[in-house]
Length: 235
Ligand SMILES: Nc1ncnc2c1ncn2[C@@H]1O[C@H](COP(=O)(O)OP(=O)(O)O)[C@@H](O)[C@H]1O
Ligand SMILES: [Mg+2]
Image (cartoon, rainbow, N blue to C red; front, side, top):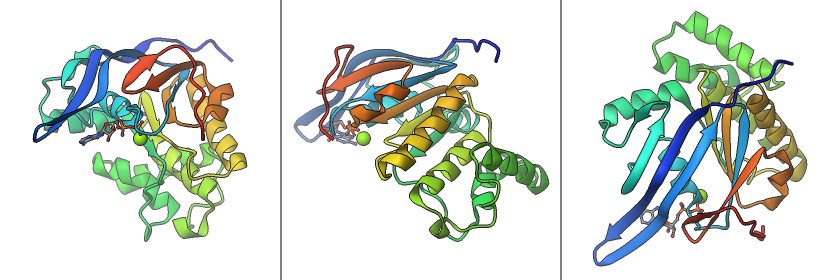
């Protein structure tokens, strides 16, 4: 296999988030600097409430930072209007969540076609690409199943295919294995690791230290701050 490139596809520089509710200010994430690189699986480990989802949401352009800079490729996205952010998310970022968020009345094939239909692709092209993405995650014989007919691990692989189908540079995964047994978690992490070794920038947020063997690089989040020093997180 050829060497994959490790180029920075996104970075935050001293970026963070605070929420103000009346007189109370909550610092969800202190000023933090982190890079996401293509060809790499970055594991972000921290206990519940430490700021992991906030960190991932900054990379995902789902929230605006309260301070600092958020860069996607060579664009600083801080001041982009909501509409442009939405377009950028659809084009460059695939999201995977703990709860697979599949649409229940649709088949796996239709679920995976959805982001392409939203981007205005024809149903024929969408179908071909969705079939390819599902085959890539080993679900070539599950096109017509409804999500309820699938195991948790299979549903998460459908969610990976759906995130993958638009060929985004970045895959952002928030506790993707938290609803899975250990064996299914291993299969899902292996899929994500494969995507990284094929050139995607993959970020996986977890409170589970057992996922460490899948990481190319690890950052720890504690009390709203980034640390390179390992913390043992109780699962
Ligand atoms: N929209 C919000 N409004 C107020 N506080 C928030 C909001 N989102 C997150 N927080 C707070 O910020 C902290 C970090 O949250 P989060 O990033 O979700 O942590 P994690 O994903 O590690 O569990 C928590 O104390 C949480 O309560
Ligand atoms: Mg979270």
